[in-house]
Image 1: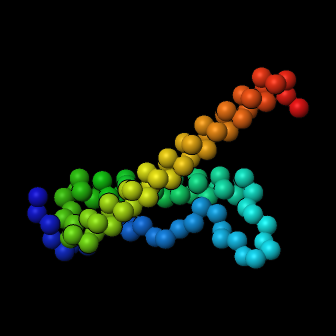
Image 2 (image 1 turned 30 degrees about the vertical axis):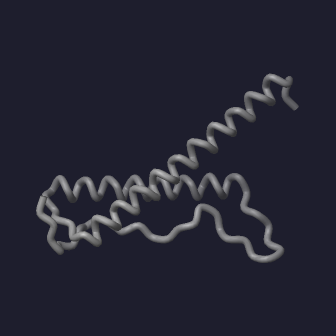
Length: 104
C-alpha cells in the first residue's frame, strides 16, 4: 500500500459534544436533546466513514496524518454507536419493568 500526501475528500472528525456542557445553575439537557445529539453524531460518523471508504475505493492515497485522523474518527463513531446501543437497551428494560408492574 502506497501512502502519499494527497489530500482526501472526506471531512476530518471534529471535537463534538452529544449534549451541551452545563454552566453553574444551568438545567441539564432533556432526554430528547441527548437523543438528538446522538442522532447527529451517528449520522455524521456514518457520512465520514462512507466518504473515507469511497475515497479509498476510488484510489485515493492517504498520508499518515490522514490515516490517524480516520482511525480516530472511526473510534469515536464506534463509541457513539456503543453509547446509543446501551441507552436503547436500558430504555427497553425500563419500559419492560413498567409494563410488567402494571404501568402507571
